Image 1: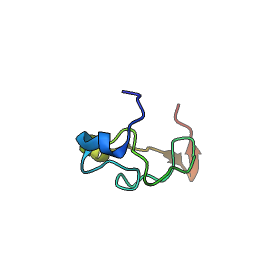
Image 2: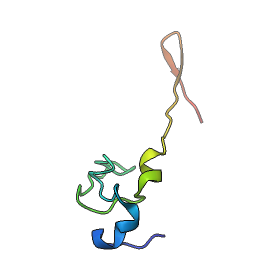
Image 3: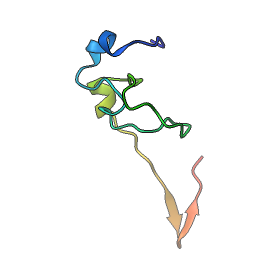
Image 4: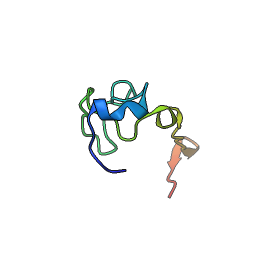
Length: 66
């Protein structure tokens, strides 16, 4: 919900509360995250939701995807 909360307030995220439990070390902007801070988003759904990455190439040349 965009509100900063403490670990004790994040019990609804159990068992994936902190950045280290989510196995996240950097933000999308490559900023190093505090491993003990509450992850955003947190929880089992956020942990299980995958982020596919695609790349295309032809004759060893990368084709940009927009």
